[in-house]
Amino acid sequence: MSRQMTVGQALVGFLGHQWTVDGDVRERTIPGIFGIFGHGNVAGLGQAIAQANAREPDLLPYHQARNEQAMVHQAVGYARMHRRRGTFACAASVGPGAANMLTGAALATANRLPALLLPSDTFATRVADPVLQQLEMPHDTSVQVTDAFKPLSKFFDRVDRPEQLFSIALAAMRVLTDPAETGAVTIALPEDVQAEVLDVPDEFLADREWHIRRPLPERGPIERAAAAIREAKAPIIVAGGGVLYSGAENDLRDFVEHSGIPVGTSQAGGGVLPWDHANYLGGIGSTGTTAANRLAADADVVIGIGTRYSDFTTASRTVFQNPDVTFVNINITSFDAYKHGSQLPVIADAAEALRSLRELLDDYAVPSEFAARAASEKQTWDASVDAAFEPSGLALPGQSEIIGAVQGASDPRDVIVQAAGSLPGDLHKLWRVRDALGYHVEYAFSCMGYEIAGGLGVRRGADAAGENDRDVIVMVGDGSYLMLHTELVTAVAEGLKIIVIIVQNHGYASIGHLSETTGSARFGTQYRTLDERARNFQGEQTLPIDLAANARSYGVDVIEVEQTASAIDDLSDAIATAKASDTSTVIHINSDPLLYAPDGEGWWDVPVAPVAELESTRNAYTDYQTQKARQRPLLG
Image: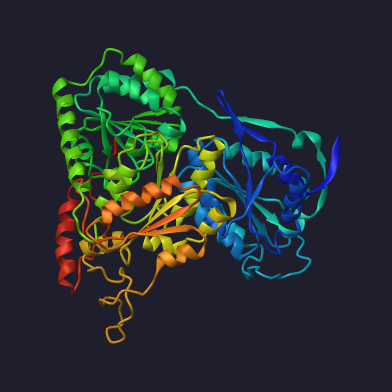
């Protein structure tokens, strides 16, 4: 049996009946759809969404957003909270609407997190050519904005003919639910094809289950990995997001408690162990702790589990200094498992691999002197964090004090959300994670503006899981806030509660510090009025902006922390007030960007000009050469 439907109607009906199955968990793959409508999709997909809402509003609930990029950020935030089992569809119109989603597509793919993107395209028939918002490339008139999604997506296709919808939709769902391939999945929809009619078989619209693959490790590779670990005198685990997406945190805990192997985490791996676990050393790499980085420097075997080994995780390949270091890489994808020239890749689900290693290494434990050293380094770092959290009594507190106040006022199951600037680095070192899903820092793409939209996605994800006891706390610098703050309107429109803490430092704190260390003296990184004579923004006059007033204009509650000696105590009180509220609250606090967090002894390779007139650059280059000398190729 079949029925006549438009392409848009068929796609909406199809998406509403997709289910992800992961062991005993069964949930909607696409629990809803975001859409901003224009002439490219209002009559096609827009009509289909309106019709579905009138007939069966719970089939594929529609949600508004204020920016197409933010739609994708919300989808990604939701996907991480659901360990990649579900995500949202995001529909945009032709031209600029579609182009606005490109940043979100790159972010989803870089983070290995699923998002379904439905950008509209110009007429497939070219009955009116060119149309509004169409590109015209003389060398190839078929090229459109949606082609820009191809290098940013893990799957891309265009429905040029109605009959293509069936195979394209099924192929898209396969990639969306495959942990080894997932990322941005893009189906381009020409505006005329969306409204064309076709016969849709009933089986296309029936419930369909997509089972998450959890591949077992092959016997040979896992036994070779176990043999290498058995010989290790100073092993360390680098745990990434793959541990959490596999739900393997309990398996990791069991393995390390038995073996004594210490654990350092990437940004995505935050939460795999609680901060006070005896085997947890904190973040590793450029923004890592001294505990993790010092142990990593001497490690003879590095066990990477679910990590893609970004340059921040490896401190630009300076953190692993043992000349005989061996990498055992456990990953769902061969692409990541073979990194650093590893001859011991284990291509498998993290939980399954950890269970196998636990069995194979039942009689293994790290040497007692190594375990004692790890414990000592952890104790030293924890004391550094305690000191960094101590209020200074300054009217302009440092970021470490602010993080400490947020930490102290939050509950164990609350979720901290961040993405860009100096906050991710400080949080990676300082935040004391107490829950597997309590640390949500987007750092594969480190996208300014992700924070508020991503926080709404986290809120949606927690609510959908029935976890209303979690507060979502978004920390955002003034630079990132100015990039994308309009989703506060979405929070008001849907009654979604998040707590947003704006850390106001009048510029780009992170890049300002980086500019200083690379010899550019913070040029162009401060928010100042234009100095007409010098033709720069390096003066003392800060901008007369009022971000608290801006947030208040959107309809959220706003608490302003005054610049007094009690600023940190007042911040703690403000968070308590926000947590007691049922609605979203923005808290504004001023900070001193020149008060830094404790140094974790990590480095990040940002090239410095070898020839320069500026003395600051020449000095920076001397230091750069010293650090470069520590860099290693890591070829296995």
